[in-house]
Image 1 (cartoon, rainbow, N blue to C red):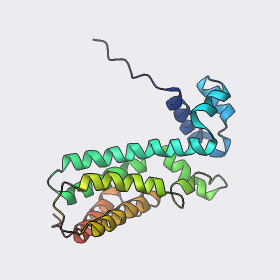
Image 2 (image 1 turned 90 degrees about the vertical axis):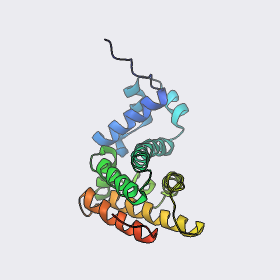
Image 3 (image 1 turned 60 degrees about the horizontal axis):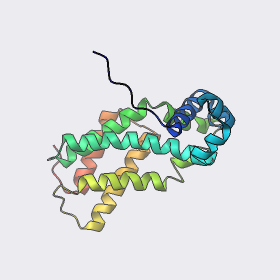
Image 4 (image 1 turned 90 degrees about the horizontal axis):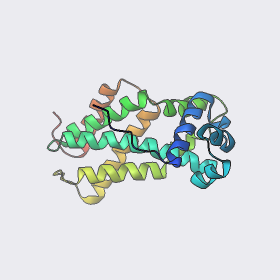
Length: 196
């Protein structure tokens, strides 16, 4: 039996794929619209039409990686519909394991030791959209659970968990499972839930 054909990718997807490859192999400073156009086999104008600017390209790369990370968060909540602490533990562990093997993230973080740091603010000082997207997904996933907090307290708790996980993505201090256990314990205390 013939395997199903892969879904066709858009020009935008192909440009972002090429930009990720080039960033991980050469560094962000060496990524240009001309090089991308050559790599993808389109005109430079097509790259500009798809991405706008190099800053727009950077945002598209980060947004796609964020979608991958939020996908594993969603799966963890799906696997633990009756245990919020287990969902948080699983989501945290999955995110940290994905971060360990993420070449784009490694390229961005390792660039802090050199001059190629243009992408880093998208994950740190300019991370508002990243944080907002993550907080929105987690808030949506937490809503069905019975949590005895006022709405503003729940927002603060979710913000705390998301920021702590992002901090460990950027600078891990222990293996993913150990960090996930600690964050789950902390979240359980904050959310006033029994930690199993």
